[in-house]
Length: 388
Image (cartoon, rainbow, N blue to C red; front, side, top):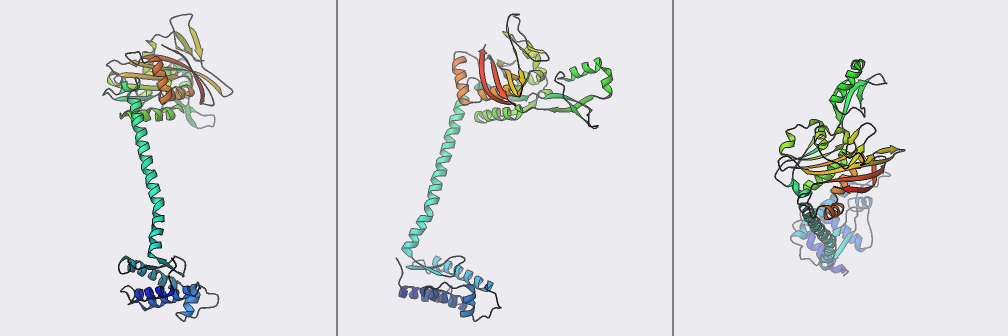
């Protein structure tokens, strides 16, 4: 509805006579000037207002007047206060948009309608947000149900502390070809014991090499740790992260243990693995890792050439010494661990494995051998060779 001129003039008089305007002659005069200019179809500028209303004389080239902007700001503020109190039932509302000096005359019905339009996006956003929260909560509950019912992972919900042990690599200090000192990694030396053997066999190296207090973790540690901790978050269980080089025999007594590492950096776990029976051999270029008692058993050896990698990864689930649970992810290269941890922390792949191999078992004990292929430390495919 377009207000009529007499209606506009009626409400202009009411506004300027209100307690919000009556004591400010400038605000009354300026509002009257703007209303009249608007009714004439004019859109005055600061420069024009200053000359016509306040009789100002500007220097040549000056087109702006900060005082006019302040006066307009005060009018907007006074109008807002007026419509919050005396003018809340007025049929016509005066509105001056920021940056403009033209008055908009809005009927109260149109204003309510416009307010409703402004509310629509808010309502839609609120509904979508609520729906998203409900969806996320439902997904979380579904995820919690998935992991709590898992034969493998529910075993860690036994009231015992769980240690996530990451296999770290042994390094030693020495002189670099650049002339400065640094650390070295020798694939054949994976413990302090093997380092001492090296020095005993080559005593001249004792002058240039020494034990380092540093270790290092490979790429797999970041990805695998994230996957495991995500599962424990859904289980509502805490998990403590340690390095294999920091493990002590007492840690194996009453704690659940999840070990993710290389066949070469098992450390304290090597004695546990050596006591197990395997129907196959797993070898590296440097040593026999997993040995079978059967001389005719199959043999697997990881390989890497032209960035293409083939790894043979073991996943071992077995009981500890005091009804605690052990879960080991072993591989020769990063791609093996990254792939197998992903398999057993993925809802679909875990469900397929458990339905096929654990459904009829009383305990989730197994030995699973995987062949994993990838490029440049990125796993691309896997094949389950056997489960015992």
